[in-house]
Length: 295
Image (cartoon, rainbow, N blue to C red; front, side, top):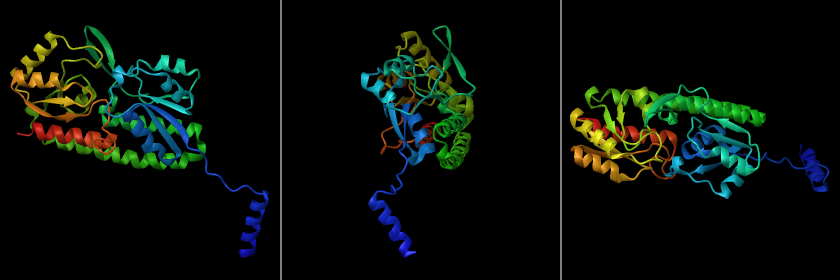
C-alpha cells in the first residue's frame, strides 16, 4: 500500500497525473434577497449566489446599473420571481448582451389578482404563502440539476431537508394564527404585499398602497383605510421594512390603532438581524403579528 501511494505521488510530481480538482461552483444570480436565500438552501456549496436587489432593498423601484448587467453576463443561471415583479429584468438582460439560462421560480403558482386603480393585475408576492415557496424550491432544484447533473444527489438531498423545514413552518404559522380570536385577525400594512398570506392563512390584510411601491397612495385611499380601521376596530397597523414608516404611523395615529412591529414583505433583513433567511423572516412576521393581535 505504501509503495502504491509513493508511486502515485511520484507520478503527480513528474507531471504524469494531475491532482483531482474540485468542480467550480455554479454562478447563480437571483433577482432579490428572498429568492437568493432559497437558492442557497437548495444549492449549498455547489453554488455561489449573487443577489441583484439586496436585503432591506425594494425591488419595485430598483434601478439597474451597468455593473448589474455584467453580473448577469458572468452567471451560469439567472433566477427571477416572475409574475411581473421584476419590471426591469428584460432591459437588464438585453444590456448584459447575452442569453442567460433563465428560470422563473414562480412557475406553476396559482396566482392572485388585485384591482389597482381600476386595473386587474397579477400580484407578484407569491412567497408570502409558504406552500408557494415549496414550489419555488422544486423549480430551482430542477434548474440546478439541468445545468449541473453531477450535483443531482446533493440538490435532491438539500431540497428534501428544506421542504421538510418549510412544511413545519407552514404548520406553525397556521397554529399560531388559529390561537388568535377570528375577529382580531385583521391587519393594516403599507402596501398590498400580503394578499397570498391572507388567502393562505385567513388573516384580513388591508393597505392604502397597491401591490407595487412605485406609486404613492392617494389621500382618498388613506382616508378609506382610516375609516375602515375605526369601523372594524382593527387592532394594529404594521410597518414594513422596505417602506417609509410615516404613512403607517399616520394611519395608526388618526385611527386610534396600535402600532405593531416591523413586518418583512419584499426583502430580508441583513444576515445577522432577525429576518436574514426566508424561514426566519416568516417566523419574525408571525411573532410580531401574534404579539400585536392577541387580546
